[in-house]
Length: 164
Image (tube, rainbow, N blue to C red; front, side):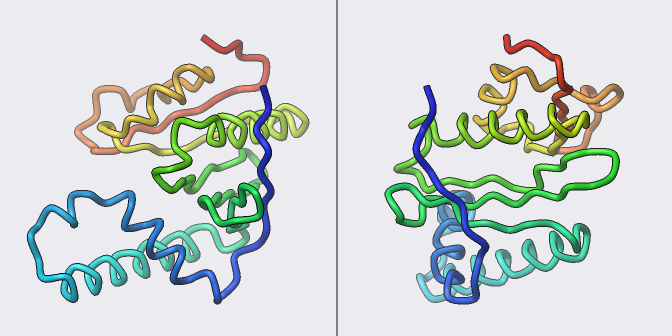
């Protein structure tokens, strides 16, 4: 089953939404017990650092807003490199998690990877519940990263791989 969504390039006017989206992925910061102003400032600084890091590491990547019923629901950040498609980041607001939007976005990227004849790669926190989705869609750990002490796991999906 496909899920209706659209994508559009991120614009400066999207910053407030993107900070809200980032905050929804960081319950660890919310649980610090900081006063609201300090918590909000910390979240904004962390979001800005993440954005700058992605932009510097993947300067030719595409950062897009995910829209469901024409309303912002998340973001998709993809780097189309010569050797791979790199899913830099995918984030959805809590109301859109588990609804099929993420699956549809990932399947669209898998189709693009198949057409390009390239692997689709990403990095995910080892404790991220999205790992179940990636496993279901056929992503596997990159050799040598399964037992690493790194808090992130490198995953890839190769064209021709069957879903589990």
